[in-house]
Length: 304
Ligand code: HSE
Image (spheres, rainbow, N blue to C red):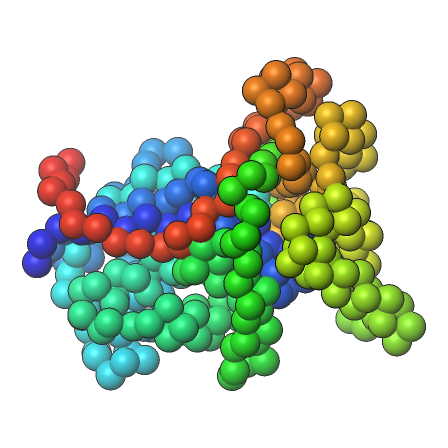
């Protein structure tokens, strides 16, 4: 087997009211360098070793073997996989989706399955349960997708995204999706659900028309999850006040949090530096939309 390298983008899900259905791929990456080996093992950067297992319990392997089995193969040729990880773990930037999509891509390449993006998406949804992170990690751009446990339908947007900045403001603590989902109500009153759905509809229309001001406004009017999750992110209001001063169109909790993402259609290095200095307790990443999604290339690798 020739060594190869897989690149998977980070993602930011929900964009406010697009709960469990909308996500964007962003310019931060996990890279997997894969070479033939005696047995499966993952070479994990030291900073991530407490969170990412090096054996077959790794989510990348689990997703790869799930993919193999879904296509009628009982095993995968053993590999050593060296991870480079730029995506903070359990912060709402799609780290677990990078593992799921990376695993699917490994299986596709190792077994020469020639899966289409749509086949990869169906497998990823079956593993992850919702499409908002995995869909953009596969396709790139903004994906608006609906999954009912069987069928997946989606629309992809890319137009105008190259001019936008998605400023990720990352608090210094982890938040497990499970915990952030437990805070959500089991039901919403009908009238409120209709209103919440109207906000999401306007968000989608605004994205389609590249009306970033209106999209940003709708991001902040979400009623599905942010009002409940804000309590887990004590700095949310301060962050909002700060990015507002610098002309952000909107701010939302990325995925299940705790990262917050501010959308800017005009942004400068000096604004970035000022926001960083006003909010020193956070990490800041000025990101662009990734329009490519997961991709694989040949590699010549020296394993350590
Ligand atoms: N839509 C999901 C949530 C994203 O907000 O819980 C994280 O998996």
